[in-house]
Length: 117
Image (cartoon, rainbow, N blue to C red):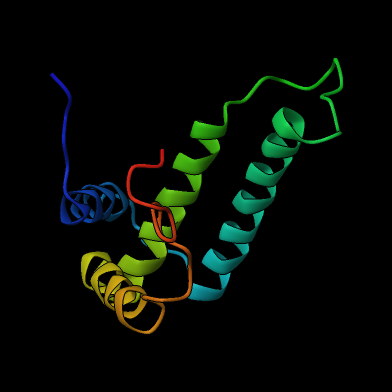
């Protein structure tokens, strides 16, 4: 059975983890640096898998999903430290995409004749 967590669950889980340490959350600027670092690591892995830059034989194998997980953890830390509810932030962004940008992209099936596949 898959362990399904809500965004609030993720934020709470990260907060419980960070709260056990005296240092607590890093400053927002330090976390921006961490996010930038993690994004660079993710970009490097994507470039190895899909780009023109193969890994050196001395480089360890890391999975893209692991790097995305690292990014998510730091993003949650950043949001938690600033009191940002990620579910609310997500909902606001989706409202924006579904209103302001609703006609920006070509929808699947748009412009096709009936009966065409």
